Length: 439
Image 1 (cartoon, rainbow, N blue to C red):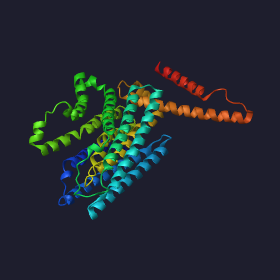
Image 2 (image 1 turned 45 degrees about the vertical axis):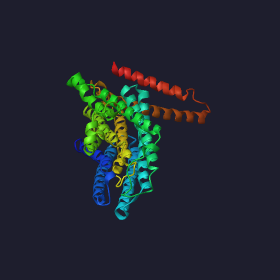
Image 3 (image 1 turned 180 degrees about the vertical axis):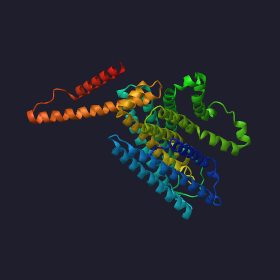
Image 4 (image 1 turned 135 degrees about the vertical axis):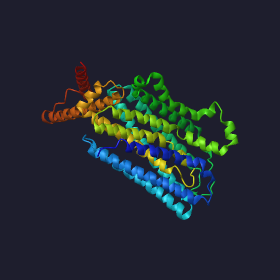
């Protein structure tokens, strides 16, 4: 099944827009909800959740087909991970369905159900991003590629940001009543939140954005020759300027007059615009992976890079969705967006990791990528070659250990080479082969 490079990203853009609208509804309308409007808001809530469910089903089904088509040895491991992520996703959907049933039948819901979804999504996402950052660090250790190292830092910061988000949301929700009704006051109590969580949340958010942006700039830098240096830097700087604009109140209150004269309109515009700052960066970061997919002539690797592009777009769009529901609104708009922290982290992991595994087993593709003059090919070459070297090391060490054990059993003599000596010898052989290929 060939992944449709148009429909799949189109679905991602649709979901990004839906996340922005969903999380914005909480800040704009939910504080004014009363019993007379609850039936309308319930309908909107279930409509949004239904669209999320359909989107997730399509994404999971498409990725599963791509994994089944894979020819690398670790296919079974990826299928197990995929099935686990699917089960976790369906559990979160089921919990959300219970919340809706409670609201429809009793005009209330239990806040512990809300907390369960946030807890599950964030813990799983932290694990997935942690695993991906570990792989990036292993790849960097083999082939000291700067872009790989920056992506390792970015994924570490994203995982850390989710940790702070989880603690922040848990602290805020811990001060809310167990039963949420439509007449409850929705104004958040920020004084109860430790400044450490807020500072950590803001710091890791900023660092994750700028580290990912730096890696993206390096990948896309070859476009500066086609576009011109000025135009290139203008384009890649727009998301940064947009991201920094959310902090304008810290140094310039240029919208004070508009805010005082038109408070509601200002709130709507301000919320819609600044709820999109991370998403705009995610789109640029996705373009980097998209450009990599255009630089290779293998359909499998192309598709995995598109999956990575969709993953990073959705991750930056949904990573703070828990902050939209931490005040337990009624209905809990933004809850469906929380699901996508898991899906997006999974897509980014499976896309990047599968690309590395595919390149590792394709000698011809590695040769083509190595000779490519385009900068985005360096990432694929680095992670693919590193993965190949690790597989070689594992196989050699396995054979060496087996021979060593056989020798000890038969002759009661230990191997004269230590494990670290064997690894060093393998590295020397690999480096020698690389040098010969480059000559």
